[in-house]
Image (cartoon, rainbow, N blue to C red; front, side, top):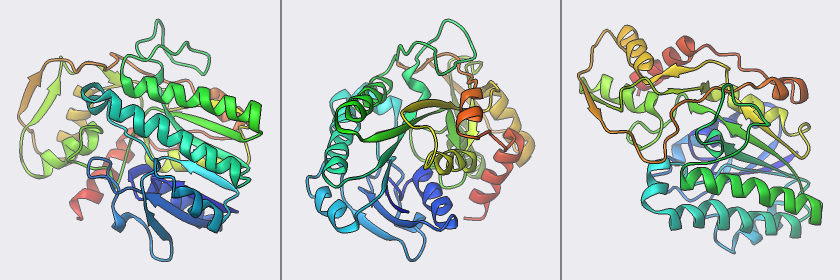
Length: 307
């Protein structure tokens, strides 16, 4: 199968490229290498073509026409809640207009399916946990809004233009290659500070929770979505809630260093708690999270330790 991965030089996207290559598919990566997006040329394995291009660029049509993909996996995005709050116009430009540009050229070039990186942020603050695929989406940040809008456009293109899709609503993804200097990804950010023997900032009281899912498990969900999940949107998580304070304590145990803690006010746009029931992904995609948080944190810590 011929697959284009937008954002394929980024943290999550590069792991998808590795998984697709291991499954024997032909890959092409499109990435803007935006400094805040985590895209790095070094993340793309040898032998894979990387096109340095923004997904909003009309020239992406020539790339599609030349490569003739069967599937487009769309992971290029503005992924920071904090940046979306500061600059919602930029967030919508990348996450909505960029997606529309990809969908238009996918239709023109007879792409069979788009796999879309959505987000648990589309749900916002919910009335009850765990979050399921049927939980009402009430996003509290421009990032969550733009990702929800993306899902609606996918349904429109499927209904009117015959372009199939699967949307994956991720929990908090972590693992090797995540940017420790970015504004999203508390585990990577904390590891960077721990290894530098510096203090960490914990927003609010640290008891806010997320469902942390290992990037290797996320890559497996994207492999499953190549042939399954037609027209579906699936929450992708572990079913376990973990607080920021628990992450901190796990890293103290892993590293042997008790980083000084500075508390800060809650971040605008952040939901308080999240936990996902991925039973529908298990039944329809054949996917389940296989990596424990303890094991995933150790893998991630060891990766950064070896850089």
